[in-house]
Length: 213
Image 1 (tube, rainbow, N blue to C red):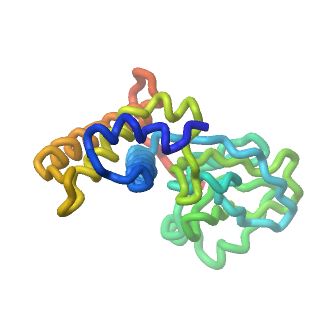
Image 2 (image 1 turned 60 degrees about the vertical axis):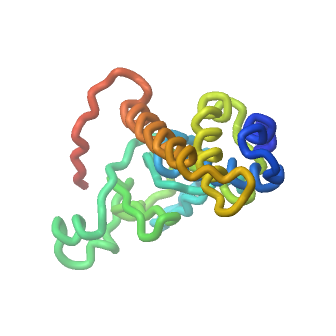
């Protein structure tokens, strides 16, 4: 893991007099903002056992260093489920569709950000369980970033942290104009990372995603 403090020396020369603890806090905040908006950090969680009749799973990342941004994909016994919504299911099915059962679900939706609900409800135990691919960001409890992620996005996080630090009010290092320039660059970096992530980091056309159950 690369600690937040690894950015301190690089940033300190631009914000003379700023306490290192403040710099580290802004580095974490910049990383959180970058990954929440760009949605470029995905992880595969280990499959979770699911018994017959169980319809919901907690999508909270197992690592306390990570916060959930959104659910990117759900697989039941290795089969990809289609994302849907309560509103669409209400349109497609009459009656109390929420109690429908089947050997295996075909789609999923989120009741709350951290709860994934599958539909129909499985009437048999899952063989390998439910596997989630999650989009994540550093949590407030995190001490740093995964080595590979930190290496890939070090410049972006530095830029975001510097933008925030320079816009602190009434400090010896305050420079609003320069801070705004760095913030504009940071926003551009987020947009670029989001675009690359949407294309799975390859030159691929983004297909329309049709959802049905």
